[in-house]
Image (cartoon, rainbow, N blue to C red; front, side, top):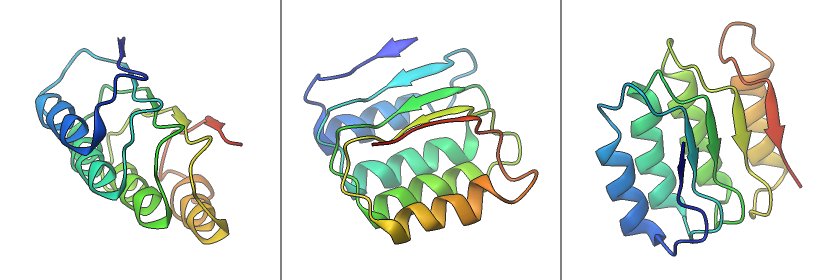
Length: 122
């Protein structure tokens, strides 16, 4: 487990963490709660999620994610057929109906697209 919640990572720190974890084969839990992550940080996470098959838990709650950010994260999840992400935290962001609609239509409802079983929303 890597808990970087409330560390003030911002976009640059999130990009650095995402790049560092590209070759990760052991980390299962990544907590980025409350770190001022925005769309560029979410795009870095998309690239991580495309290649990472060990993460089971990702919390990006209480950040600055909007529709483009949630779409980037969703795309990363569904573009990785061996993704093992089961828990996704998105609470306290600025995501509207179209962002959540994209997440559900693309990653949650289609059978076989993702293994997400727990969503943390508010």
